[in-house]
Image 1: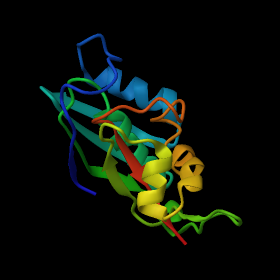
Image 2 (image 1 turned 30 degrees about the vertical axis):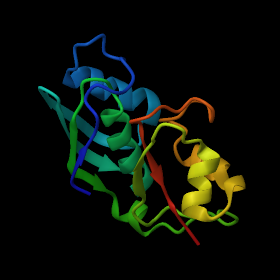
Image 3 (image 1 turned 90 degrees about the vertical axis):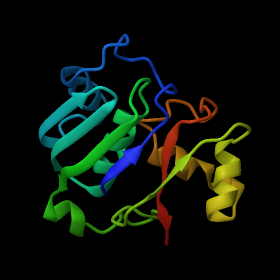
Image 4 (image 1 turned 180 degrees about the vertical axis):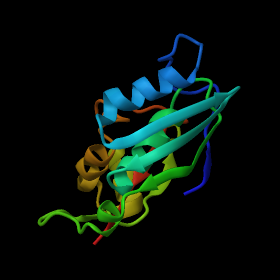
Length: 158
């Protein structure tokens, strides 16, 4: 996972228009807890570069999405955001339909999209929308509150 592009003028205004490294680090800590050891963010103009050691691949993906789904952010570089060897090798929990140990696809929400529509597109079943919501809980606070330009992750299914 390298550098990801986001829509600069779209996203939550969580930093009061003054994106800085401390704000990015605070946002990630508030949403991901201590799941990234040695987290560092560097902000330059509309670009964010993240580094640290994530407990698992979904944490890395969520950190990239949380950082990019902020108004004023255009790119997020996750090349220095590592995944611990234990987290990379972890197998999905019993009963889950998702393959969380494999890289997810990122999807940009378009006008008219719903999580059900997206679930139908990727999983062939609109009723699988809760899987997408749960996989993006840190990015999407309510399943009916998504917006065009927002980026989410679509984990692979078994």
